[in-house]
Image (cartoon, rainbow over all chains, first blue to last red; front, side):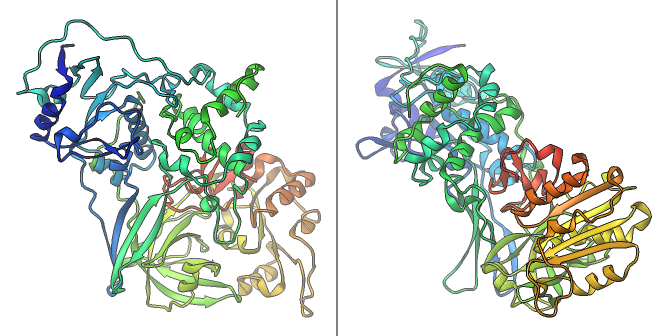
Length: 340
Length: 283
């Protein structure tokens, strides 16, 4: 693999070079501490050194709100809505967020392959960047390290004064054509250390989760949880949705839209007759965690949590998924670990 | 990396676009329940199995799942028995024959007919649970040669809430059908038994090894019906249950209908009891 060197002050030049070829989306600073992925207008506004973006790039393939179809109320007819291909470069993506996209690819392909998601996913090019784990990241514990290049077309590894640039696919190589970068000879620096770990070897994932259904951790977590659904909202592998009709003000037509939904919300499992099938917060917390570490994992052998730390960082009640899992592991191994 | 190949857009489907179907007939059954006869465009058959459901939508109001109440043996049209409990069903209740609604489906696994063929069939239906079970009942009646004896156990809250009254009379009169009904509270005109549905189970005369049962009713009913059937001696492998959840998308994506790892819209709604014993959220 050819390694090239990009000086820190040439990042904007690389972004501008990419913008000549396709639309580029990259992290932008929002306020003092937040970052959001959005389309680059000014190459110098793209940020590569950030802990995590508020919402992962899932929002481009599975938008927070998306029109599924439009309808005409006078004619009582409907037609399917366009779902344009992304056809863009996603610049400065962290490995866990691409890991999450791969998981969504699976969810929207398996069973009934869904056109909306799959159409939007087309033409997406990924330029990754390494990161220094902060106090919330634990991706290393779910097998995705900060240098994981799987699925990227180009990967940038942070050095003190710049980045190592590697083109990993023919598409990536093509994008770098026409920008002169010197070779990098020295190899990669050591990976940053994770401050957070879940002590759950993948080989034991199934066993630990199998024994966890009745664990007291669900009731204990429920005592703090307020059921706001923020953990679902920020999770890059959550893909549940609700569907609602919106009527225009002239009442001549409208659209059937889907929106992100969350299994932590009480109405999520409610039926018209009034029954709520997951009435308690303990049941809902368990369902959320089992969705990430058991149900789909039993099928695929992979954790469906990518260790981004968003649900913990954003929790309004201070609940940590790392502590939940470590308590399950601790109870399985019969050793004491940090309480919630 | 997750080891699989993403499907190409050409092989992916528009999963959410309904076809426009015409309401042919509207019959008020009780104060809250109405039976709608619906026809797909160009006389197309729905092609369902007993126990399946469709997503019905009215533009500007929304979409909801409804179990199919007619047997696949009814040609050209299908029937939906609907209880008025929400906004969509309120608007639906004002619709007239000739008006059109959106239909997607049929969805779900339906009843595993192969496991019922050649056997006696026991249907345990509580309240609105008779709506999906009527599809199976009429299928068995129309294909008598494929099945043994038909037992129907039906319970409603009051006699004014009994559904499909004409058919209940026919089942009562048919010597080939063992039809039993009870109401929780009878009016002054009610001459039949009163009590919850499980009180009818001990009195059944069943060929236990050769009887396959399907249960459908309100959530609270399943555990009690199951206890009564087990103490009657019906083997667990002969028990199926049709479960209700919020099947919003119908195609295994939206997450609302999940029972543990199982998507009711896809793996259900009809479950073989031995298979759902391990699903803690099921009953």
